[in-house]
Image (cartoon, rainbow, N blue to C red; front, top):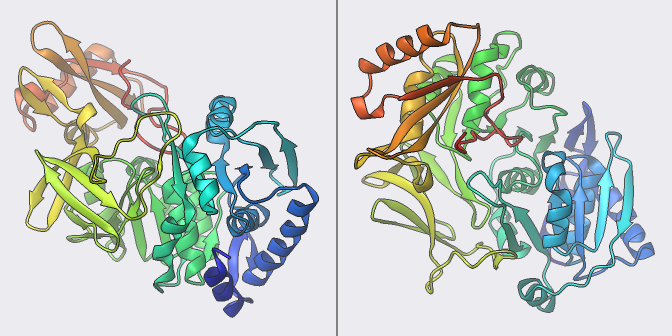
Length: 448
């Protein structure tokens, strides 16, 4: 049994709350009992080893216990959430899903059969190995979504090392590598997973207060929304001990403001990719963007200013794209970094860098400055082609209060002249009411 070690641990703290769902606690005993019920249901529906099964749901007791049962049964699991509803059929087709188990808001479930043969060579290889699998789809923020196929066992191996027991809010979705990491870290250490029905700042803060949440794993985009909403002023967040942030570059101004508001909370930058898993990391301090990554099954190197990673928990490959690994198993992350001894600072994705007449502009640096302007709610900076300089810097703003566009442009340029080199100052400035982040709370940088 591939997760026998985890089930044994769950039995040790049977009466401890494992999941809080709709503000109701469910113990580890509850999860284990539901796993037994799922075994009977899977037998009844002839769902066995090697089948490709989608779980459409969130961190509900039934969905989590099904996930554990499917791993135990050596199936290939494809978690999907409502955030990818528009791509649902495409993703089911790419993954060659044979069974869909969908959950509603009351944790009731429905099983749908799909008469689909498994033909992908990578999936066939995993089935022959007799191991459980996991398929994760990238966000597609830089193009078409890719389907990463993992052998689940190497992904879970690191969780056998005992660590801290925490009450953790499940901000990152179940179809995200960070969400999977949060879930299994928490369960493997006897902690409590606290589910939220919405990623709205007030809902998140209310949940932290009500359930005395200790750890908030999230994204810089959400932390900026938290600052904007000032929801942190309306709730008792004194239980918070750790905020981890990743998935995108953190604007320095946002980090400093969060640190000022939560001076007693440890702020930890995390790093991971759907293709590799989540690396262990250590920030230089809570107010710093410099951090160490790697170790314990992960190797790192810097080549021409870009981070490369080799991982024991790396995926087998993409189901719908060529392998990104070189012949020695290294993956170019495309993340441009600065190095200071053992520490690195991520500047941005290579594809996001704006080249203005040979000078490099990193969007996160410009956004960090622009977010300090009065009346600026959010901003996204991207490059736009230009026949003279190659590219120009463009900025799209969300404002708190309406402003005359021409006057606002003058204000932006005056503000930037004192803080940015001339080639970094936005040439094209637009104002929009559209949200500039995805359902995964990641900044969208596609040209407009």
